[in-house]
Structures are given as C-alpha cells and as structure tokens.
Image (tube, rainbow, N blue to C red; front, side):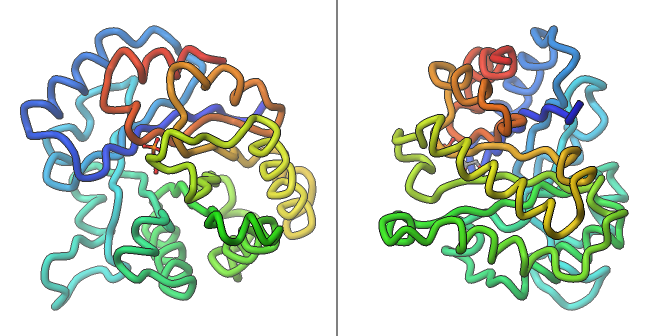
Length: 247
Ligand code: 13P
C-alpha cells in the first residue's frame, strides 16, 4: 500500500511560543499510527523541534542547493542534516511565484536534496488561467518532467508529489474531489510512462489547496489521493488532527 502522508506547511506563520504549543498539542493528541505526519516549520524553529517527536517528522520549507559558501541568508542541505532534518519541500508555488524559482532551479534543488539524502515533497500545480485554457495536465506534467529530469527510479522512494492548484491555495476554494482525482490520476499515469507501474503505484501523491477538516474526508476518499499538504488548517491542532483522521 502507498504511504499516506499528511503534512502541515506552516509557511511564515507562528511565533516561537505558538509553534512549540502547536507542535506539542499535535504530538500529544495524535493517535493515528498509519499516516506519516509531518510539520514543515519555519527554519528558525527547526532545531528546537527536530527529533522532538517520534510521531511527527519535522521538515524544512526551503533550502539552497549548495553545501556551503557565500549565500547570505540561505540554509544548506548539509546544515539541515546536521540538525537532524531529513525532509524538504521543493517547488511550492509561493517559491516559484514570489521568489522566482523556475523549473531549472527546482530541478537543481531536487538533485541537491537527493544527493544529501533528504526526502522530498515535490509541489506542482497550475494557475486558474492555465486550467481555464484546458492545459492543466500538460502544465503540471511539464513541471514534473523538468523537476525529475534524470532522476533515477531508485530515487523515487524518497519523493512524494503534492498537487497544489494555485487557485485553491489559501483561497477557501478547494478543487472538487473529481478535479483532484482527475489530476492525481493524470500524474500517476505520467509516472507510469516515466518509471513504470510499480514505481507509479508506490509514489504518494498528496493534494494541497484549502484542504480542511470539512473536506479532507471526501478528498482522501479518492483512489489516487494519498494524503494532503495542508497550509492554513495545519495551524490549528484540532483541525489538523481531524484531517489526519480523515482516511
Ligand atoms: P492552504 O491549505 O492554506 O490553501 O495552503 C496549501 C498549501 O500551499 C500547502 O503547501
């Protein structure tokens, strides 16, 4: 069976105290054991949260793809590993749109993460304009094709994919379960064509974009939705725990 993953992307939210309180509450109340639960925390909280829980894996939202050097303000994969962080987000639409990360840079980050044995949640997703033009599958598989260029089958066990339609992120407008399932199936089929069915069937594909305690059950019931990457609703312990329990 594919791994089910529910990951919180805290983005640039929470004070230090709030972050610890949220993390502790999730850790204390989490009873589900068959879901890989993760919290992608702001970088300044990573060291204090890293290794704090056996039930919740802490990951980084970002890193710079070089082991060290003159990159003011950036954090390297080596530094992440040195504080016990083993997983990162790559390709989030906010990094692409607000910080100019293009497909080529995202590909470099994927290679760097794999070289440094960091597990990846690789994000993809189209704008409303692209969807309205009917080009969403071509666009998303194009993003994946570029990011995973040259990535060997062997490395796919370290990669999960998150489909996050930009029009659904933080908007309260979630994809319908049919829209999510259609895209997840298209991604799975693309994985079959690139890596074969065994790898495609074992790669987790998460949904992200206004997933919340009210709609998670329906989204997670889709055969090709293997979990969620949760923004806003992951900042509330009760809501996040409800989402985790929504399988
Ligand atoms: P929201 O759940 O707030 O829409 O954010 C989704 C997201 O961007 C997770 O990475």
